[in-house]
Amino acid sequence: MNKKLAALGTGLLALALPVLADAPAGPAMADFKVINSGDTAWMLTSTALVLFMTIPGLALFYGGMVRKKNVLATLMQSFAITALVTVLWAVIGYSLAFTVGSPYLGDLSRFLLSGMDYLADTKKVAVHPSAGTIPESVFMMFQMTFAIITPALITGAFAERMKFSALLIFTALWSLLVYVPVAHWVWAPGGWMADKGVLDFAGGTVVHINAGIAGLICALVMGKRVGFGKEAMPPHNLILTLIGASMLWVGWFGFNAGSAGAADGRAGMAMVTTQVATGIAALAWTFAEWIHKKKPSVLGIASGAVAGLVAITPAAGFVDVKGALIIGAVAGVVCFWGATGLKHMLGYDDSLDAFGVHGVGGIVGALLTGVFAVKSIGGSEGSLATQALGVGVTVVYCAIITFVLLKVIDLVVGLRVAEDEEREGLDVVLHGERVE
Image (cartoon, rainbow, N blue to C red; front, side):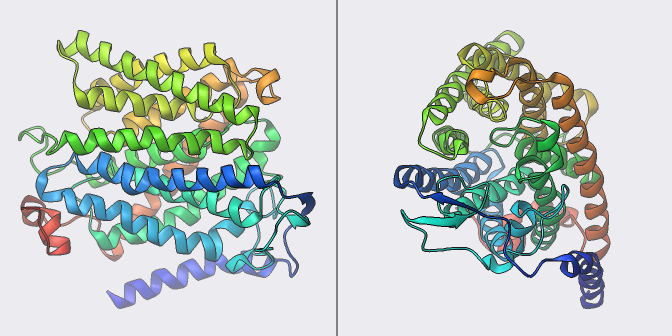
């Protein structure tokens, strides 16, 4: 086991050496701007709201949907990912994602956050070009919360069957090899997707398509849960799920309105479109389920709300209320189909609908951003062809790298717990604890 881990570490070091060799000695490109205290206060608040989305929001949302024997393990996944990605982002992830570097990846000029002016106040100071009128430390923290929630979303696809050791290795590698490059392409100065005009206000491609496609690949590679399709696997506590969904809805205002980077009119518009799209998506899913299954469910309306939040994310700062209504309504219906009809038709076990909601909703939102973007709101007119390019490249890149990572990790430590351990439950088997 130790030899395999050592071999894996040596391989990763070999991959990193070219980047280290090319890293410039000086700091990343900076600009001199006046730090705005109002913008900074809003972004500090938004950062806390987005972190609130993962712990406790997503943790409870997912935790309530699994069986009782796996609830602690599910909560643990979100919590552990928060801790792990925090360290990775501060050490190297932020530098590779948001320094100028090349169109495809940043450099190491912010390794261990070196060169950052931590005490920037109202004076004119050198700040990162993406940070606008807030200190770079706040910008870095805000982006960290996005890097945290993305791999946490993936866990919904393989819930109740992955080893904890495999989860930690997968999260670390996937964050650096998938999330970081795509974030650089879309959001960093000089990123190639940004230069092509791909619009992603708050993470349709970077967060949701990335997480959804990775979740689908995980579900396909790892296979179905023991007893899937033969045994009933109802959520053990929908109260937790609804509380978690409510926390996600509230926290999402930091996610979307915070992505304006300032306390301004665009942030206000992003908040409006987020609320409207979420409301109509929740209703659309509910009525679709009501028609199809004859009863509207609590799980359905909560899932519909999350689908609306996902779909409006890339569009929030680019569309008006009309666009938000259409995007939300389409997402509610299409994600209901993705989480029910598509999954059952193709027979894969996306345990908590990570792909059905985040993958499908992210694709819907990203494409419709190209249709409904209003230049007077976001400064850009959308292009369906350009958005399709961004979606397509993200899907293919994420799918390939995720597949390779899973296969390598399976060879090194194994991906799944044993069948008898899965039947006993991950809480006891992996963590030695249980909910009484």
